[in-house]
Image (cartoon, rainbow, N blue to C red; front, side, top):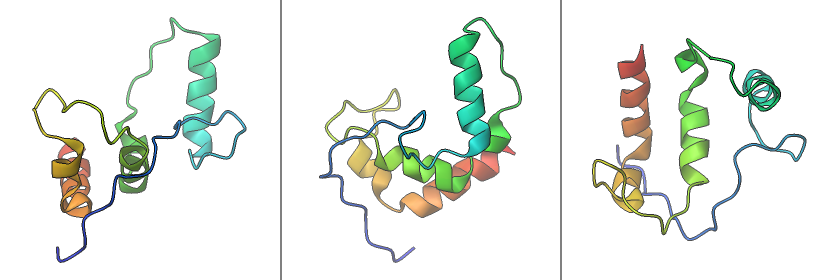
Length: 94
């Protein structure tokens, strides 16, 4: 509320670093490594790892010139009031 919209002029960056300095939490990094080693592994109950900070970081790393999502909302449109939208999304996942 009352916060400026994010600018999406920066190029997209990879999310997972695998040692390259990403801000992925240690838990998510371990999950990513396990998924690479065991591609048939099933992961359940991961929603608790999708924090507001993680979701905002992920959003800001997306390709700003990509196509809208299945809901037809563009990245620029979703970025308006991003903090409030992410907080709502996290609340709905609980």
